[in-house]
Image (cartoon, rainbow, N blue to C red):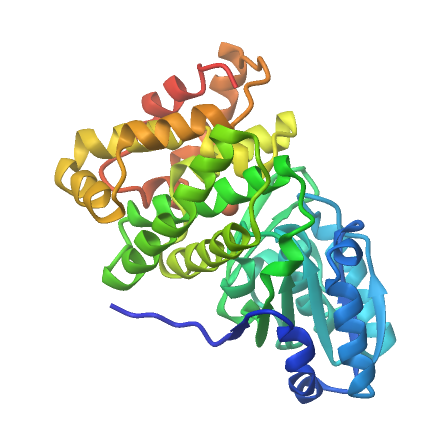
Length: 365
Ligand SMILES: [Fe+2]
């Protein structure tokens, strides 16, 4: 077994303010990377700016990160950081700005690098130090070495690289309080999917499964309650979802995700389905696959988490909106080759056959 996470993780109310002096370790000038209005609305941006001012750190903001961030936007951010003489990068937001901030750190240190250079992982200079401050309870990007970006052909790729771990992650669940119900469910079910998928990875071990199980136990009851009631989460439930997202991130660090995430990318790329929902769409197929090929592992998972296949499938059914999307035979045939040699798909326990993927793509989304 092995576990590696060089990120200093500090969570709790006011953790940005309380740890302002830690920011000074990384330099006197930084670039803040954010998405739309969430960084401001959540209070995270104001707290971060106050913390930087208290330490005499100069900063500029790059707020050009859209959902499913493109590599091109990260290149632009990297250029801005380089021109501003930034010594470190702070990412504030949900998974998209946080994943993008990691790549901005790479491009800031390598401003002339091309897309090919980025994906080759031969980076002449080490990325700038990264500080991440989450405003959603979903990706767990704060604690992962993963960055999922969309390339110039419109395809999502995830990179796993130890050099993009954050140096410091500050997790204040209060920043997730203003998240609307739809985004809360979409991101929450992404965190749950990380925990479930990681458990059923060929790379899973005692450590990663411990994170998975604890994440499911914290997040699942909250999601079930929200799905059944139409309520928004209480502050305690927000905290539980945030912790579940961090545990999910720690679970996928050594294992990655398995086939539902990667097949879900197709739905996001082609039909704009939010990442969390797109990943959860195929959770029932994963649970059935594991029951059929690894029944003991399947039973051990439900026993440890105190749930059942039926309960998880019911949650997906209640939570993930069906939009009446039906892929044609032609679309399925054209898409299938991308998964034939896909590492994420083949990391799923048992053997995932292309016919299985074709069959799951035939359902209505
Ligand atoms: Fe995810």
